Length: 107
Image 1 (cartoon, rainbow, N blue to C red):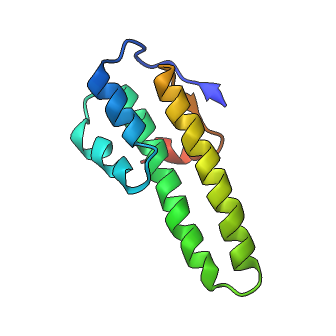
Image 2 (tube, rainbow, N blue to C red):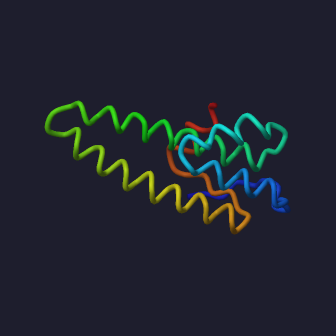
């Protein structure tokens, strides 16, 4: 994961919103509420992409045979990436996730 250069001195409210970015559907709150803070927007966009991946993984349960396997792998991957995202916020950093970070940048 590469680290992008964003504002490092973030306040409590920015950090709180950035942590919310990795809590499923709550990722929409910082995306809409704090448009002027690039640090929060970076994390919110990655969080929204993770949430969309989680939602799509639920729909793969309808696919026979491989759906359940894909759902389990996706759930574990999303959980791990969410934890890494929260840790990066708590450390005041902005780690760009592989692939997901590129998709998030397009939002």
